[in-house]
Structure formats: structure tokens, C-alpha cells
Image (cartoon, rainbow, N blue to C red; front, side, top):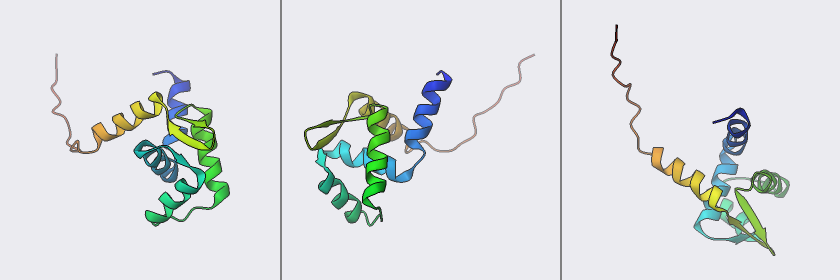
Length: 101
């Protein structure tokens, strides 16, 4: 992975609210109002300017797209979500180290 991709993914995942937004949109395409309600249902306080900031970053890196008034997850966004889901239940065990001489 090159430094540019690492920086991009770090910025996208650098906010819990942005990650929640990505998962909200993965469940179904949503309008701004539906996104706002999604945060309310999860009892996450967020202002409208903050929602637009997070949408802007996800749009910038093309993890989501906007069609009319609806936001939806792109294939790139779906792959990121799949990656996050795949590590969700991995135990934090320390791998066995073997010394080779």
C-alpha cells in the first residue's frame, strides 16, 4: 500500500461518525434527512455542518456517490466495509514468533 492510499484510508476512518455514516449508507441509499435520522436513531449527536463535512470527505475519496438528492456507497466503499467487517471478530492474540538462525 502506498503512502497516498494509506493517508486516504486513515482520513476516511479517522472519525467514528464518518465510519458510522459509511455503514448507514451501506444499509441503503439515503437523502440528507434520512442520514440525519439515522444518527438520531443511533443517539449520536451531530450537526448539519458536521454531516456535510463527513459527506464531503467520503465523496472526495469516492467511497460514496451522490445521485440526485440521494447518497449511496460505491464499490470502493463496499470493499472498505467488507474489510472492516472481516476483522471485527478477529481475536487480538499475539502470533507465535519463531526464531530462525
